Amino acid sequence: MDYSLYPRNDVLCIDMRSFYASVEAVKLGYDPMTVMLAVVGDPDRSGSIVLASSPALKKKHGISNVSRFFELPNDPELVIVPAHMADYLQVSVEITKLLYQYVPKEAIHPYSIDEIWITVNGLQKLFGTPWEIAEQIKHDILDKFGISSAIGIGDNKFLAKVVMDLHGKKLGIAECRYEDVEEKLWPFPVENIWGVGNRMKHNLNRMGIVTLGQIAAFPLRQLKKRFGIMGEQLYWHAWGIDLSPVFGDFIKTEQKGYGHGIALLRDYNEDEVAVCILDLCEEVCRRARTADKTGKTIHLGVRYGKETGGGFSRSKSVSLPTNVTMDMYHVCMHLFRAHYDGISKIRHVYVTLDNLSEQEETQLSLFEDRTKKNDIGFVMDEIRAKYGSTAILRASSYTDAGITLDRSGKIGGHRA
Image (cartoon, rainbow, N blue to C red; front, top):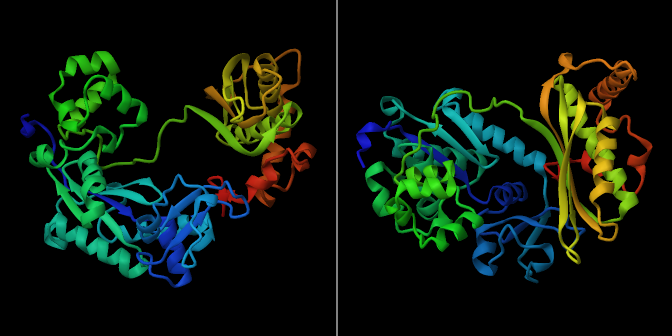
């Protein structure tokens, strides 16, 4: 591969190790690297997910982020704490502010609450080499927040991310340039590579591809034929090539649609799920109205409980774009009645509104007062914006089947 044809940058990928657990450990005065601590979504539910576990807990008992509360060991040294999402968001913001001391906003690309890319091109005279900058940032995060981090350094975001995942989490800091790809990345199984999920892994394995190096050696034409654009991306990533931007505004993207879903805490029957769907439609339409958008395609997805499994996912387009809650609700209930098997208990529901257009482009109807229906929604939105999300609710939201009251105190589905 002739790497002279491709851009070279100094990109760092910074990962806060066991972030949620580390934040909780620091709050309680523990050492995040030695305490055995688990962050649980809801300690009142035995089936609640362990959102994070400290390195010591992972090492001693093998607890991971897919474990359940009831699977935690009966260990007297174990510390169990509920999630506090607002705290994690605040610490994440403060860490990002710390990085402003090194690079401008345009060089920072948050990937998740605990992971971030920064581009440090041309900073040698100010802070030293990329490796020295990584050491300084790692020290600053530990000194100011008490949180350990792992950092990958690469010519682009893919290399920085993958070398951090494969080597940086063990070594603290790791670097991979184009010339290092064969040695540092190719021997690893495809499932260990960022961007390769279980389905892709199985598809690749069936083709006799087990390692990243085997992807690099596979004909590009055949990968494109089998996987389309994803196959082409796999091929170039296997060679360490990533042309995604390393500077610029990484936040603004065109909104394709608005969706909202929930994993229910118990089995819902047919009558109860109608209340849940109404609450979901209310939130989706509120977000659409806030953005002055309307949608023409309404989608409903339902998954059944473990006893029966299965579910359905269906959509319907309406003649006039809408962001009126009851319009969307009636379509969702039509889809539900048409496709629900009438027997299975329901554990997951989601709704989406897409095929968007601007609010002012919506046509008026001769047969109904759409302006009045829209005004009601906007008035409710204004009340909630001023007095809180639960200041005005539909009566059904106060029933046992309602979900809005419970979710109002959560961030990302977990307690704030």
